[in-house]
Amino acid sequence: MSTTPGGAAESKIPQGGPSAFDPHRPPERELLDDCVHCGFCLPTCPTYQLWGEEMDSPRGRIYLMDLAEKGEIGLDGALHEHIDACLGCMACVSSCPSGVRYDRLLEAVRPQLERNVPRTRSDRMFRGAIFALFPHRGRLRAAALPGALYQRLRAVPVVARTAARLPGRLAAIESLLPPVRVRDAFSRLPVRTPADGPTRLRVALLAGCVQDVFFHHVNTATVRVLAAEGCEVLVPREQRCCGALELHSGREPSALARARRTIGVFERLHAEHPVDHVVTNVAGCGSSMKEYGALLADDPEWAARAAAFSDKVRDVHEVLASLDPVAPRHPVRARVVYHDACHLGHAQGVRVQPRAVLRTVPELELVEVPEAELCCGSAGIYNLVAPEAAAELGARKAGNVRDARPDLVVTANPGCLLQLRRHLGVEIPLRHPVQILDASIRGVAP
Image 1 (tube, helix red, strand yellow):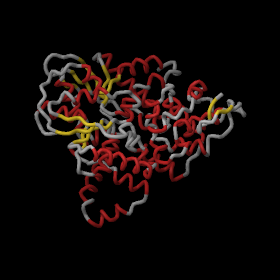
Image 2 (cartoon, one colour):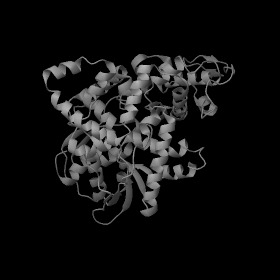
Image 3 (cartoon, helix red, strand yellow):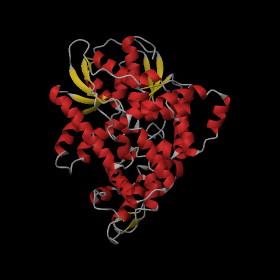
Image 4 (cartoon, helix red, strand yellow):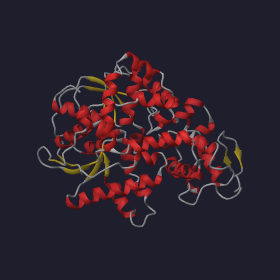
């Protein structure tokens, strides 16, 4: 017996015909059957919390996948609609008592939909524009110049009024523009930064795309903190996008091409200068890089290389938490909310380490917020392609943060920083956790 998403018992649905999925990496029957439709995922699913719609819950989406795999429904219509509405936050994976790998199911289904279900012309063009820009650091740097000019003009009343009248997706883009510092956008990290004192580890850093251009100061703080804790830091110049945004959006061919290129870059570095870890300070990038081994498991040329690479990937907090602190800390007298980025807390299971690292800072008070497991609405490109739902989630998260009365909010993902900034405004400063640690080590205000 099995249960429907609503909980009623029924017989297993028989195979109605050929699977609606094409033969390239369809969702695995074993993974679909793992779901017993118990409902433990419902309180943590952001879209179910917004709409209370069964098919916008993880178990409802798995039910639709099951029907498509059995040939009962096609890929277009309900399946496409409800998978598109999913943020991919993976809170359901954390909350599932049966260990259902919804992450693997979603990674299989999204590429199927991208290959086989045509989008409207406007949606196709909008998404195409996103991926023509964000994975390319050179293009992002070029965009930083008009971006900086626009942010100056934004204070002009006529510009502000025009921005306030922008529709849906354009309004989302405008409201989520990162604070542009042209000098940072065109700065580059040193290829090698020696450890301060004896070398405890040698690590290679993924600089990222949006992270390196618009949050370069976070990368700089990351290198300083790692060096202060005894790490030699190498940053290969030829690295490019890791493919995370495309992977999470179902654009499999380009994502895997970027994965192979990233593996090759760090392999060449490792051959010349063996490293203990490949480090990232971006939740979304880290979750994808740790999955390279699974993503390329059926590629004879790359399977073993991808698995070896993924084994070396660590979030920066994992590295710092594994080392006994050696750099002296100065007090940071602040009440701080730590927001779990979904692709760090849920996808990677890295929750304890960032909090442990922050607790090494004297006099810092770390506070939690209600509904901490619920996504802020950023979710890769979700807040651009589904701005209304993302805005509801962002406002809900901002309300919970304000209730905690923090002096600072910290989170380890650029998308979360931009989403929270949009909904919190300038009333509460937002930082990456390594910036707090960097400020404490240097004895400056965070």
